[in-house]
Amino acid sequence: MPVEVDCHCGQRFPVSEALAGLSVRCRGCGSSVAVPRLGPGGPATLPSPLSPPAATPQAATPPSPAPPASAPTAAELKKSSGSYDPAPPSVEPEKEDGWLSGGMLGGLGIMLLAAIWFVSGLPLGRILLYPAVMFVVGLGTFIKGWLDSK
Image 1 (cartoon, rainbow, N blue to C red):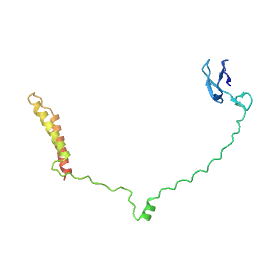
Image 2 (image 1 turned 120 degrees about the vertical axis):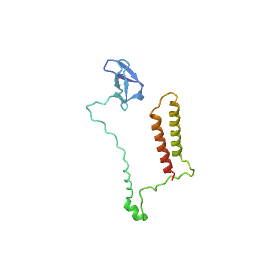
Image 3 (image 1 turned 180 degrees about the vertical axis):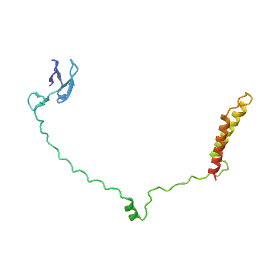
């Protein structure tokens, strides 16, 4: 059985009983209209904003769970296990066995590119500062790689 809904614009239209207690859009003006709740065996009623809210039976709330135990402090761990080290053990990177490490190889590559750039600019009459700077950077990278491999 449909429920009749009245909008403030004067439009009256039926809606399904399943929408009782919800809001729908008016077909005429598009505003929100509250669908009245169906009373027990009586006509549909809208809750009045002036009337106190109906008392709803309160379900028994379950007791709140016990608070979780706090994490043991460093002093408690030291007492219980004998020692406590909050920092993980550091791991040294393994040294490469070859005579040419990655840093050394990268430095040689940079120096090679700088030399090619410099030599190719000579026939064109263009000697730039960039290849010299690049060569020095490559030399520094090579030396750092050599020192790291020791």
